[in-house]
Image (cartoon, rainbow, N blue to C red; front, side):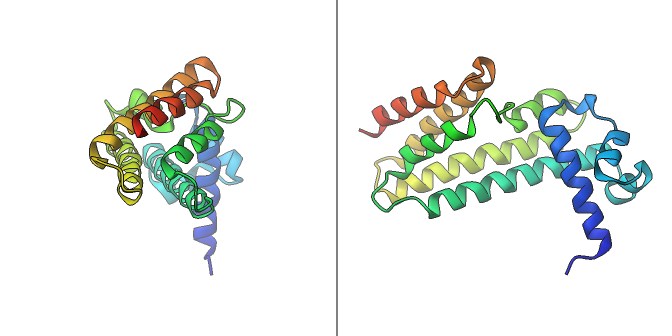
Length: 185
């Protein structure tokens, strides 16, 4: 059972995560996070200590949510599906311009890594997890040279995300899938 303190922390984290997902770090004030969470600025600081710490917790939460989403996706994948190609189908949905506002990890590194080095560590972990997941999928599907294949597919995956933000379209995911098909033949 959650304590009132845990519930308040979760409410603050959810409010901050929603604001940081659509706005730059520097655009969001702690007062705004507190208002959205239905609490006070003092309470935000009591629970998280600083805006930076809260932002880092939001990044970690985002990473865990993405990983859980991918876990569920692969658990529900039909047995005969190629999981490596399916990943690029998932990516197309993820890059839907109605919801995709850019890779949170890349944006965080771009905005804060000079002053908050932990941002780079979390972003690197996010990128490693995608590469590791691709390598595991390549190994389990019996692909030759799974580590090399994982590096190539991860680069295609990451590039599609970057283009999607710039173009405002998920078209890059479809191109990424065609490139992946070529590598997998």
